[in-house]
Image (tube, rainbow, N blue to C red):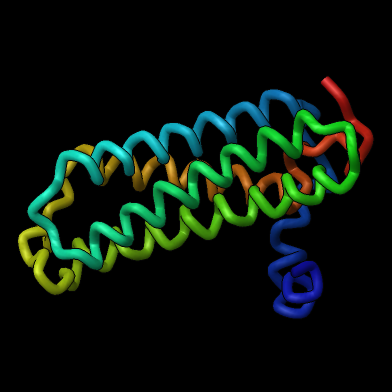
Length: 164
């Protein structure tokens, strides 16, 4: 990924982390876990309360719920584990959380602008509170992961050997 950042020039634009960084790995990791758990709970609530939706949307919600729960568990296990292998697993869990978040944001925007088959009533409905909450939690997690990825925040103490 760093090669893509370097090749595209985006790496220079986000290289501000060389000048300052936040050394709060426990706070950063707990924030990520909290955001993923909140995302999981909102998705689970939508899944349970909305029964009259197409099957593909129910499957989508179930996959988002499972993916975000796995990401939260992986981040927790990767953080609590003293072994280096699980720290790498924790990084994969961060990536899974970002993938789930970005897919959720993308489908939310598509459903509100173009609409989805069988869910035409969602087009233009920007006032649906669980959807807005999902968008906010997903955006915050993706932003937090981006800040960890670029080095602005530290979430894995083994990367820079920084500890709270």
